Amino acid sequence: MRHAILLSAAFGSLHSAMGWSFAGLVPGPTCGSAGPSRQPLHILDVGAPLLASAAVLVGTAFPAFAENELAELAQGQLKPELIDPQCFAKSCKLQTTACAETGDCLKGLTCAAKCMGDTECTVGCFARYGNQALDDVLSCTIEDASCLKIAIVEPGADGPLDAPLPPKALVPVTPASMSGKWYKVMGFNSNYDCYECQRNSFKPVARQQAINIARDGQVVDVDVEYTMPRERVGSPSKSFQARLQEKLVFDTTPGSHRTAHTEGKMFGLTFWENWYVIGTNDRSEDSFRFVYYTGKTLQNKYEGAFVYARKPELPASAMPHIYKLAREAGLEPTNFCAIDNKCFNTPDPQLANPPPFTPVAIAADSTRRDIDNAFGESAKTPSSSWERLLVDASEFLEDPRPFGKAIFSQQKKMSEIREFDFDGKLLPSENYRAGR
Image (cartoon, rainbow, N blue to C red):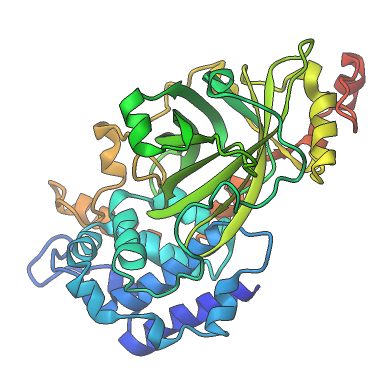
């Protein structure tokens, strides 16, 4: 993988230039102290190369079907001219200091750097350690102050006539026809579209607010929900519900290549997306919307597709139509994932609210302890302080790949759903039950 070569160089620059080691990130006991040292870590010294490693990985976490241009840019090594070390202390001091004071921010960067360009591994790191401090420092150093000069894509949304063409003809939809709650039930891009318990709610925005956002389109609020696992050393597994809000602008420009466009942030970095509605249900079918999209960040470009349904389950009567639409768009429907939405049928009492990596999600105060300072307040007894230190050391030193792999291994392809045949037709129940 060419991303892995670039990342290896970035992480290597950390060791050679700064003499940093994993052990150096874990504070040891000071003389006369029964617990972890509270001495500040010198992230202003090691921040640039460490964040460079993480930034490159964040780029790979936004998948592209083309090769990762970042690897070409660095030609096998992270060039010194791509990093401005003074910028971290001068322009992003508050964010960098906050990262230094937030153990999970450092753990997230360390975890990502050890992934060596592996996308699944990197997503797993943000699912496990993602927090506001990490998002803030990446946003400042990459986008706001350009401490890391790794942008290779022009910022900003595509114009309606400049957006990529859709893979098949658009079908007419209006904000009114999209209003209300929709569940994602099928997804094409495993890195974006296949997380569990996905529900999107559409509602119109106030007239004046809509005018301020877009003068050439109709605006709706989109409330996005999904869940991801968060496993920590020494703690029981939890599922976290992420929630974020987006503004989706429906284009009204004659000849527009797309249905709508949106902008948001993930991993602290901005993304811009074009949405193309390329299929809707017939009157006799269960309701669905087939959406293809293209998107970009400053580091990469990507694409994907998903199917909305009004219920958190596959729209059985419409599946042959959906399969046909997918193939007309050059997408093989049996390669789509079937999104697990069973949480909407049986509420999980263990479900908590803090986000895995979305800065605009709503986090419950009661769960902040899972994402706050790993080197924070000393426990009341020396034994618990040392216990916390051992957990910190384990998390800094652990191999992050198994957890990332586990997240994606839970996804199920449509080819594994025995209820439907190759053309999406519903099989008699005795057929698929016998085959299970």
